[in-house]
Length: 335
Ligand code: NAD
Ligand code: LMR
Image (tube, rainbow, N blue to C red; front, side, top):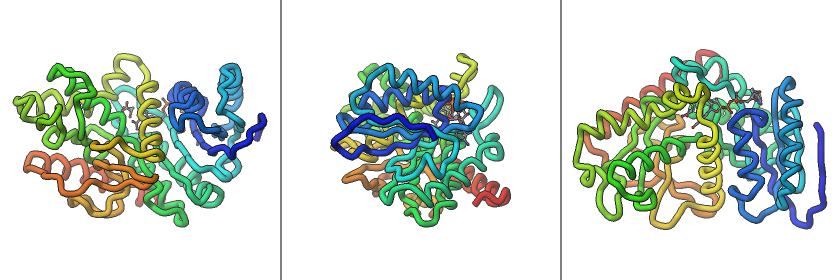
């Protein structure tokens, strides 16, 4: 493992990031280093890559150095998770193969799932007691389940998966439809899986102080345009760019971890994929997206929301897919 040290008077937060030479991280690392994640706090970056990508990663580190970010007190890189994850407080697991045009994210299960067994075990063995782990690499929900199951000594609620990108996409589409700034939208929820079955719920979302579904007042748009557009946005970006989303994925990864550490805004919630405790009839244990608030670094699933028949059917369909994915990785021997 290579090391570059500068002097710091405060203990830095140790942040592991995997897939560090990849396209998401080319945006993510610079956002984190510049303070978008933790503000004005010293940080140490622990960057994991596979061996053939270490040279490219050295180039990324040269660029980080060239930014002279004041809060970055140390950067270490390596290809051994048991060294890179040693003592880390936050772990952002991005490194995994992205899908190509024509694939569904679940097609990546056998290719990517195994990455998260070894990384789960390494986190279990060497991460700090307070570690929080966020999985971005696809299929994110089930990869998080794999990591969690391979880290029996870390509490299950320290493993989250990313559906914040879907949450942000849904806010943006709704704001454009009703002609308001995104800041007028609150209480958005993505339910279920980060996949084409996900359900962005406009029946609990607010536009100002009004229920979004009432403001839209167009069920055909909700069913025929809004839901598919949000759920298939990743594929649309791959089609247009020839590469999967990167800067927006990095932004969502920062926002999810920032809110998990520093807390969610007052009078709002965010979508986080977390281990189900059985809330809203989602089978316990699978990692599914819920409306969550965070206080003092602990998330809580928002309780008591009304789920109408339309929403129920869509949540159930996405959850059924998560159960199938869980069964598939069980059969592959990954959990
Ligand atoms: P990329 O191919 O540009 O980069 C991935 C990097 O991971 C590569 O540099 C690769 O060498 C590295 N890697 C592979 N195996 C690794 C391992 N075992 N340990 C450490 N690093 C490893 O891909 P990308 O565009 O950065 O996307 C990364 C992942 O994030 C993909 O699976 C993609 O589908 C997913 N993604 C998720 C979301 C989301 O919202 N959850 C959004 C966008 C992308
Ligand atoms: C996204 O939602 O943009 C990512 O999960 C990439 C993908 O495969 O869609």
